Image 1 (cartoon, rainbow, N blue to C red):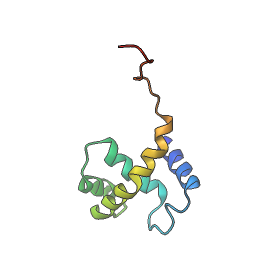
Image 2 (tube, one colour):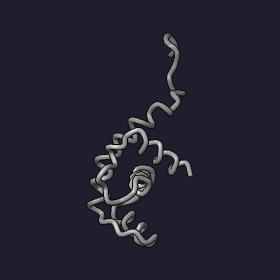
Image 3 (tube, rainbow, N blue to C red):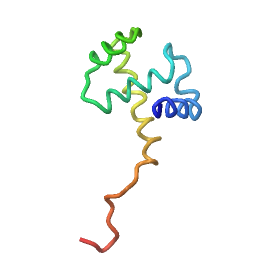
Image 4 (cartoon, rainbow, N blue to C red):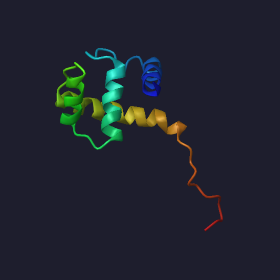
Length: 91
């Protein structure tokens, strides 16, 4: 649910990023997040998507990760709290 909302927000913010793609933005964001979050290979994700009825090649997944992972990380960076920063002058 959160991932779907994130994908919709990403799609609204950058309409040109997903333009011309064969698959929907939610599927692309889901596949990229699976790769980044869990220790899965492209072929594992390809198999998981095939079980859900979507045929995506592992090389396509590779291209998605290379093109969308930096964009997703840059946009999520502002939501990450910086709890590990220490005030100046502390050891």
